[in-house]
Length: 224
Picture 1: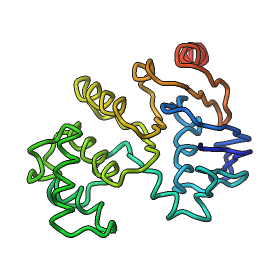
Picture 2: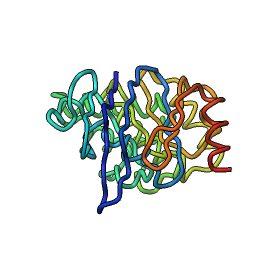
Picture 3: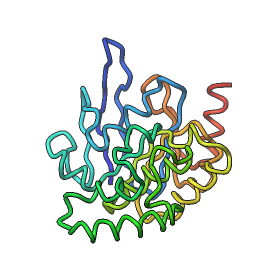
């Protein structure tokens, strides 16, 4: 359960979130809204990347601000630009690096990295230079590095923005098959048909919260 209670936030005197109250228990939840609507700020509060200026956030009852380390063990985050998350020379080393605090031997980390890459569409790429992967492969690598930690929640902030249609579809298929609760921030409304719930934000407020068809219809009329 992810809870937002009276959440508000300001940047440079401008209100970007105002009085957000949500309880997210569904397996697939999406945040949609125009640029500047507050959706990414809200998503980043789930694992403490942004601290609420007002109100509070809880992940299974735990505060991401006061207990950030505990929450980040439960919540993985995938950014729009995978290059910001890739830190090691090869794909296999990058996933293994994410496992460095798990008490595993180097051999175990390497084996686990290969397993995770294979599970998520990058089998055979463990030795491939990470920054020479395609955009879609880089995004899958960033996802794999998060999933290697076996989080309970995966937050994805516009992860398909830089992907072509084929890679976008593949990434969506991978997300659909995950056991984790997924919170997706996106402008790509086609990804939402199979989601359980879509939350629409406008000017920092929740203006619709419904099943995908109704919420997307409302959003289309809003931006008309």
